[in-house]
Length: 188
Image (cartoon, rainbow, N blue to C red; front, side, top):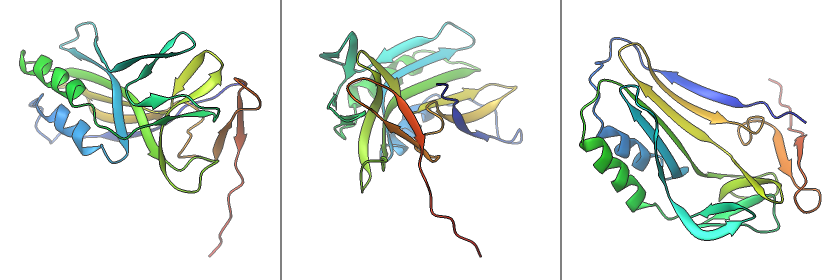
């Protein structure tokens, strides 16, 4: 089975100042706290190699470390405690304040608040258990800011779940299934 990513891209018009204010990146993360809670970040300034910043717990799921606030259950998606990781954002803020830069590439992965295919109300979910020992992110947020390109992108790697009709299920422990969810059709 092949899961193709879906994404939403916002390109900032060239008329907007190119000045890079790195202090705005932590503010961007804070502004998303109602729907997105980052736990793994990476940034690259002026074309450097990406520098990772992670928030891991001491527990593991198989060979993978769980994020702080994440817990694996028998459900296909890991559950997540809605607690902003202030340390993670502060580490990023400190690192970005130490340098001035003309370009920035930034990626963040973390928990997403949404209504799953097996829930009736929105809840916080971390990752999808595709196999017994592997967890897959539900969303990656990317920001690129340079003289040539200013773009914010949200990538949903699991066939666009949860913004598409894809339904992630687990048929038995650790198996993978992505099934289209039937949606009511309305006509004018």
